[in-house]
Image (cartoon, rainbow, N blue to C red; front, side, top):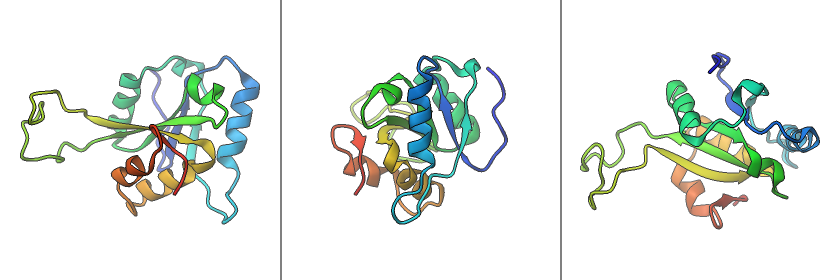
Length: 151
């Protein structure tokens, strides 16, 4: 896999290259400020080298950077609300009283968080997670059927 840009911005990686018009619509939605002027601070990675990147590969990329990562996959490009996949690697300090690899029920703990976020609300997650204004759980708890559509 190619090296990613060294940037302080949140990476938005395109993994589906099947529909250029859908991609342009998604980019317009993401790069248009909301009515209060808020905008996601993203670095767009539009390279066929990342076509069909799996969630596990995305987690690996995110963990290497230690940051929130946004994935523009097939679901994002085909859904009417353009639900992007937000991926956040956990730092390993969560649930310190549990075994490193298993939770209290003996099941493997998830090492990252995944949440769909509609393109028009990407700014909210990106701004607040990047600045540590809010916790990941705030967005997960506000999601409807696994999709964050705003507060």
